[in-house]
View 1 (spheres, helix red, strand yellow):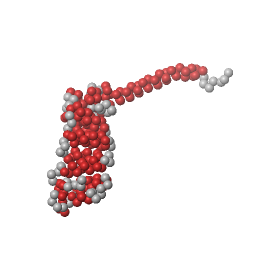
View 2 (cartoon, one colour):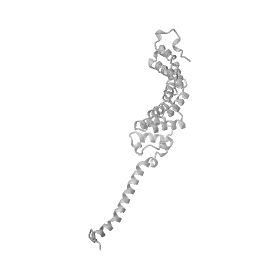
View 3 (tube, one colour):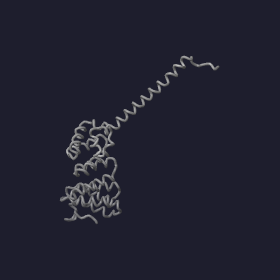
View 4 (cartoon, rainbow, N blue to C red):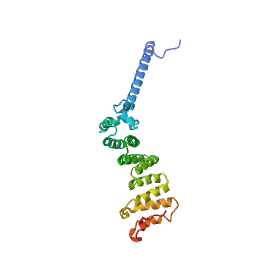
Length: 231
């Protein structure tokens, strides 16, 4: 008979402990899983579940609503889904907390339901630009231009998105339109003329790139020439 390495009584006790250890391990696993579930699904158990769904912000972490001011803003939107006084600071809070894409999506979803305004669209544009989603930023910029055709800033923002996407011809058109919407070009910084020159050079028209640079020095030009860009 082989020699036992441990006394028989100890071996028996060890055998009896195994089911206990197994049960404890199972309970720990269940507890850990339950904790993880509660931490990741609080949004879906939240009284503001419908708000998160309307804003397309269900990817926010569970503790977002615990941030200072978040629950109050969420409560406002829960009671009044088109409350503009609540959505703007809420999207800013999302971006400041490190969730720019959720911020942009919330602004856009709100706009789809309740109508867009410049503050919402600019917030969405900034958030999408921050994460490098220039295609999304361009889409928002198109909405801004559609909202106000005569506002130069919107065309400038769209031009910036086009430039980032390397669509230099479209960017050039928007940059020129931006300056043409100014009633007095003497108030425009020289860097904006340089921006147009860069676009001419980028599309293979380096000779035309000289004209905007000359236009940034109005005293050297004949009257009226400052408003003419090469076509």
